[in-house]
Image (cartoon, rainbow, N blue to C red; front, side, top):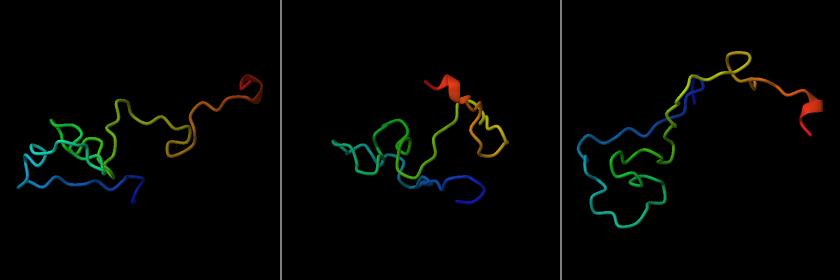
Length: 71
């Protein structure tokens, strides 16, 4: 991991239809989505819908709760 980014599996350009023959789910999560075979696969990052919102801009939890509002 460098700069807070996870490693990604790069698609093999020679294997466009690597999932056409799969009848069962794979152990690493590849081919679970037939339109995008690497979505949800192991070691692939999720696509963010919104930009990250950390209190310190890097890794502090946003909006810490005061102790009296937790219970």
